[in-house]
Image (cartoon, rainbow, N blue to C red; front, side):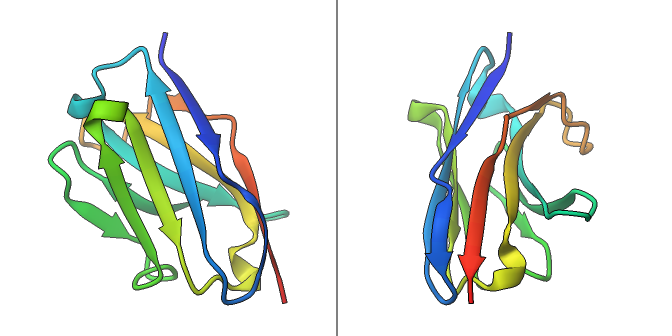
Amino acid sequence: QVQLVESGGGLVQAGGSLRLSCAASGLTFSSYHMGWFRQAPGKEREIVGRITSSGSTYYANSVKGRFTISKDNAKNTVYLQMSSLKPEDTAVYYCAADPTAWGKYSAWGQGTQVTVSS
C-alpha cells in the first residue's frame, strides 16, 4: 500500500528555515502529484503547495516567495523548503499523494510538527 513518511519538523525561531521531507513508497512516485498541507491548532487544514508529476509548482499566497517545493523521483521524495518562517507557520505539516491531477489526494502522511517561536 501507499505509505508517506514526513520528517524534518522541529522548533525554529522566526526568520529561520526548515526543510521537510516526505518519503513515498508503494506507488509510482514519478506519476503522482504531491501536495503539502498544514493544520494549525483550532484551524482547518489548508494547502501549502503542490508539485505536479511534471514538476510544476503551485503555492498558497501565504507562503509564496518563502516556501519551495521540489522532488527527487530517484529517491521517491518530495521536499518543502521553508524560509523566513513566521509564528503563524506553526502547524502540523502533511504530505499527500494525488494520482489524478484533480486534487483527489488518496494517501496522506502522519504529519510532522513545525513550531516557529517569536
